[in-house]
Length: 193
Image (cartoon, rainbow, N blue to C red):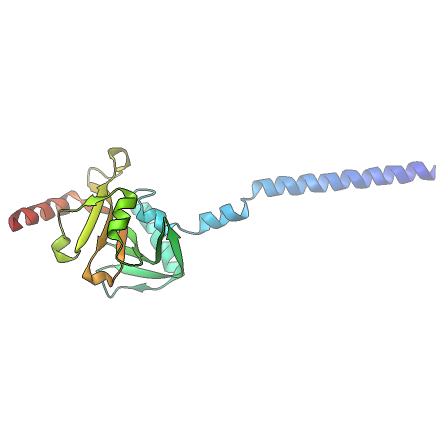
């Protein structure tokens, strides 16, 4: 009789243990994995500079708010807000520690004057304009039509630029240029010819 009671008690303990394991497994399945959770919390500034996703006011606002939590902006140069990140980030052999918000663009300042290397890596073409002298070397690639989320207002391009105001660094950015600004820049370039 004692054996039967002992056996039933052990069976009950095993069932309770199985229940707890199943409950814990269900709970863990509902929670995001650690790295995935970190990836959602950490903004990918480099991907934004590569127009992944293409520039939009919503994505720029989310990135701006994330940058505000990481650092205070330097607004003393480039007519931009530059956020110095706590640690460098790298991708495709390029390194940055600075996120840039300028006008309607989101980008990073790459270490060194590497616009030509970035152009080669990301399939950018030489720019005809040097933006009123702001850049000495510039490359761009307009996104395809299916990635132009604001085509009625202007066009989105990925750009890589060097210039005196960048202190030996290269701006890599996803840039939205309104139709009016593009027309004004084209008119200015025609007048200079």
